[in-house]
Length: 160
Image (cartoon, rainbow, N blue to C red):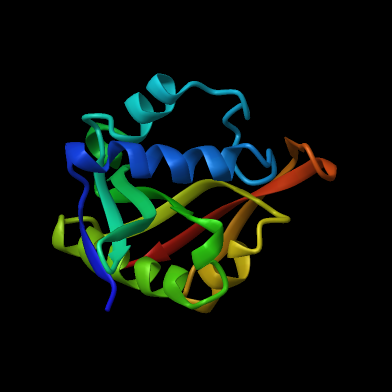
């Protein structure tokens, strides 16, 4: 059974392992593949976010965060980011994490969720659409993918 919980300081090494594996490919996140552990953990675990992990049999295999998309008068809309280790991809856990995070965002008082920058070639686009996100904008040549070169990025939105 998958356990979803708030990240703890003891999860830092597992979170870094997942982040490093995801960004090294240079095809889904704008972070440079050579970003340092301190830089990435400082960002991922920042005070402006609620950071979570997913674990199975005591092993962390995914991490995600939720935060206000904008300060002040825009703070009722959530933003989030998700990373799943390669050995857990394609097994339906991403969908379970995504659905749980929508409930959690609602519990935290958000009324909608928006993704500001989803690379068009990211396989997760289909998952987001399957759970009710709409593409509300497209930014041409927004991402310089290590694999495919320039790619568009979507802005995606869903009411909670």
